Length: 242
Image (cartoon, rainbow, N blue to C red):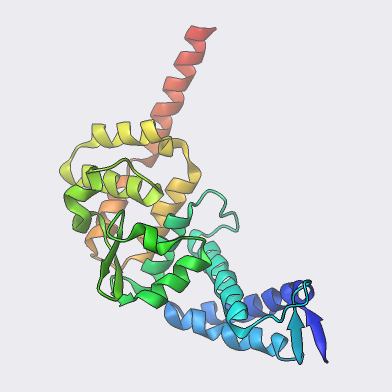
């Protein structure tokens, strides 16, 4: 066929890509290969037309198609990693961290590859250079774990969910349980389901005997106690107010 509007075939592209991603996920394909594997199914739909346009009449480039595919794959992968289609509680930095750990583990990757992943989740990667958990070494990017961040983790206020989780992991490692509970209370993470889902997902992503995995599991071990404590405290306040 000659021409199609991108807005009209987006749903078909997403449907075709997700159909294949389901197959690839079940076959155990993961990481960077998972992103690459989605390109073919998208091009199958896109390639049926001699010209794909925006409503403005501009031609949709292959680059724009690939950006759309990366976003679609990122959302699918996150929904499987989090075991939930509801991703509304995740900030862009947390989305990036989870996907990076899932796709690359502790590897150092070329800047452009990391930039594309960040772009897919709405994160401006350059704004995080050598701040928060993003470390840049020349032309490469690495995501730092809590121990690698060391003292820098406490120099500024937490900016995202991963910052809070990493601080909590350090407190747990130090045996400062009361400080960890206070952190979860002050930030509201103790009663935030998305925070605990993120911690659980990260724990499952990281390999066995990984130090960060053990530290995150330590934070997770407090979950029921923290939630129960906060609910009791909240109930007492309401009684006094009454």
